[in-house]
Length: 347
Image: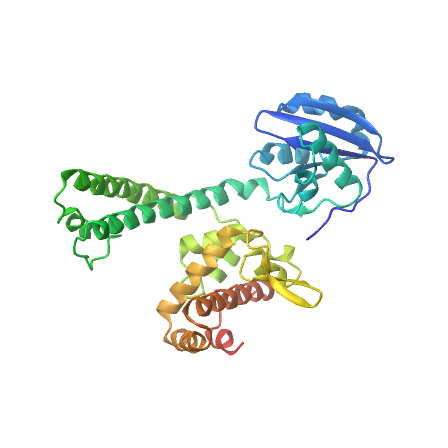
């Protein structure tokens, strides 16, 4: 956890919403200089903080509307701090909670050097990263449709079909074997949606490959040297990491990628794990997917995975492999080296 500890003359805390924002400005002594509810309007906000612009820092909790505020502060050379939503429990733990109190608490945390920082992703790469995330979401929706089709066949005790439903040429038999035409219609609805998503996902992937300029081609091609990391998966990992230098240690990186479980201890006793929801779920998915694809393509990795499976079990063995791959990618990018399978298996 990183905290913003720089000293300023004024500290601005904002409880940000989609259409409104509650602004609180404190001075160095903790005196409230501004406490006002404003619409989410750039000009209104700049006019409100104009008397304090001489040495001001702005902070807001990380939520879906922070993009415009961060870009506005960057445009006017105002330091901006993005508060980590899950770590800012001081806001959510009070007996009374409203926008006015939340804005004051954010400003107070900022003034005291206690505001936990989230990463302010650069504006130029944000749209591509968000499109990659949207593509992943659509793939998951399509997978859920396939799962519903197979579950429906099991519900009605219809014989299973060995063919892989993800291929359009194999889908026609999945509507057969039902006595009730209403059930057939439900299965057809799932397959029609999947067919539409096939084309949409294909178009998005084509756009990402041909129309999107990768911000760091060298790093991207270095990621592609890992067996199993293709064009889209490589772009996903690249844009989610952005800059490997923001992680000073490999432990910080694998923790951010949700590849480790953090233990909780008290009085010398381990009570379990925590923090499973803190980190980047998109990197977690990407490394888990890359581990499966690496396992599929390399016989040496299959043998290594078999040893892990014999020792730890099937599920944990795959998690260990994903964690190991995450560490390998970290050192690849830090040392500017391509993937070496022999080195990967030795460590």
